[in-house]
Image (cartoon, rainbow, N blue to C red; front, side, top):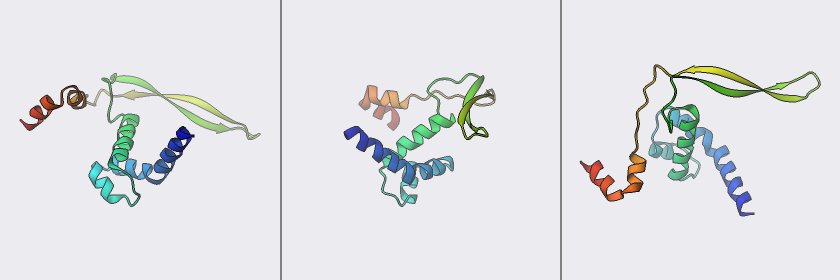
Length: 123
């Protein structure tokens, strides 16, 4: 029952605020600014989570260096004349050769040694 309530809460939050958070994040709004703009009561931690997941999904953030050229798969929903629904896999070639990958490991450094990280940031 606990898992169901958690899933339901996540669904309600995403339906109420997830789209707005993703839209405002795409416009370049910060977490604090998004929190000020949204009328729905959602914590900054949830806003940060939605932004992180969205940026991972669209490729703005990558956990590993992307290949210059790779294929991206997606699925298209199709319905035949009898109403049967099927999904067709479609691939497209993505060219990342014009994009720059910058390795940033602030999060890892912060959690490895918090005091050392704070000293680094203050300098």
